[in-house]
Image (cartoon, rainbow, N blue to C red; front, side, top):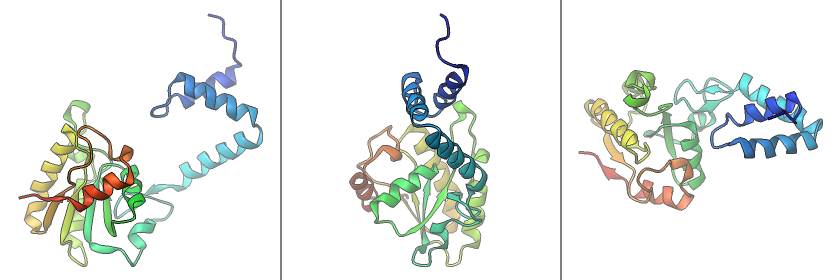
Length: 203
C-alpha cells in the first residue's frame, strides 16, 4: 500500500502508538489533533515531555515521582510516617490520593514479582524498603500491602509479608471491593476507600 501520510506524521503516529492502551487509530487521531493545532500545541507538548523527562525522577525514599530528591508526600509534615502503604506503581499512589482518606506514606515497588515476565524480587525496590524499615523514625507500626488482586500481585504481597514479618509491625492487605484481576489505577475513589477501610490482618 502506498504511503499517503507525510513521513514526519507517520513517525509521530508510530511513537504515540507505543504508549500504553494507545492503538494505531487512537494514535492517528491524537497526531491529527496535534498537527491541526500546531505549531503552538506541538511546541508546548514537546516542551512538556522534554521537561518532565529531564526533571522527574524517583523519590529517594519512597520511589514515587519527584523533581527533587524527596517527593511532596514524603516531605509533608502532616503525614503519618508510622503507616506505610506499599504499591506497585506510581499511578497507584495517585489513585489512593484521589480518595483523600489515606494519611500515611507510600513505598513504590516499581512493578510486581512475575517470573514469567522475568521480574524477580531483586528487580524491585524491595531492598530499599527493608532498609527503610530498619531505619524508620518513628518506627513503622503498620504496613498496608496494596498490590493488585492478581496472581502476581498476591504472590508479591505474600513474599513481602515474609520479608517484613521480622520487623514485628502490623501487616494488612487491602480488603474486598477491588475486583479480582483488576488494576488499582482503574478503581474508582469509593472502591479504593472501602478497600483501605476493610483491610485485613496478615497472620
